[in-house]
Amino acid sequence: MNYSDYLQLDKILNAQDLESVKAGKPAHDESLFIVIHQTYELWFKQLHTEVDSALLLLKNPSLNDNSPELQTLVHRLDRGGTILKVLVHQIDVMETMTASDFLEFRDLLRPASGFQSWQFKELEAKLGLKFAHRHGHDYYISQLRPDQVDVIRQAESAQSLLQLLNAWLERMPFLDREAADFWPAYRSVFLGSLSSEEKNAAAAFEGIFKESAAERSLSPRACRAALFIMLHRGYPLLHLPYRLLQALLEIDDQLSLWRYRHMNMVQRVIGIRMGTGGSTGRDYLKGAADKHYIFREVAELTSFLVESGKVPVLSAEAQQLLGFRFPQ
Image (cartoon, rainbow, N blue to C red; front, side, top):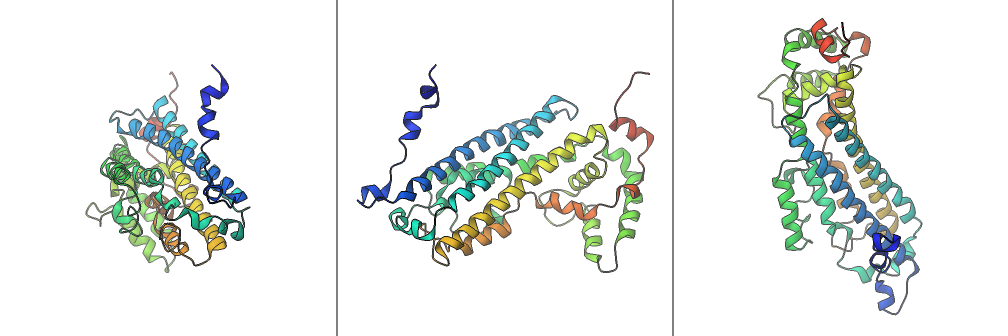
């Protein structure tokens, strides 16, 4: 096996076809522009590999929470978050290109646009971003080819990571055993920790105990399970579930950071002008950045935490279930 053949470097290194060269006015920074965006798409492909693996693991109704399967799931989601950090840092390289440098070849790209990255939109759908929650419904697939739209629609119709997370949380086996004693005690502690100005937090907390609550991505039962994990993350059996929740929040954080860095970069380079694909540029990106939080309901559960020393003690049976087992 030869290194170049294995990596198919002939294809990769000859895949930069500069439009400015074709036009007879070579622009130095167009090469950088192409390489960075090609690299983005390669990382998107790897993110799909990691998320697809996570989806397969969570689709298993008998996922053993006390097994290597859960460790594998957390590991691959952690990797996804790390890849997204790399994507954020690539903007540092992109920002070495000035507005004037970009204008040398920008008009040659129309109507091509990063907005046509179907891989990124498919990834958002796999993670759990619903069509109803997208910013700019009419525009977000308008620039794509029919086969690319089909790929995204298929991802939107399949079970997402967010939906499978909800089902996994609802299956917590010991939740019902503790519910009768733990939650009434915790409600008293939590409500007692709020100031008179925090009535909205009290109302939101009560919402996770009402099965008829308004439509949400995570059911009240799943929210209670996630909150239970956060409160008792120190127990061995809940350490990996807690890391799973944190991995998902890290993915959301990095996606948000990438969107805001991208938005600010666009502001610096083209100001208030329209994007090459016909979008409103910075305004569109800001709308998406403000709205596209996939695991928002997991993050909001931190509103219901109290200091560790005030969390009601679990029953001896629950502590035994959640702890290490030693031979007698």
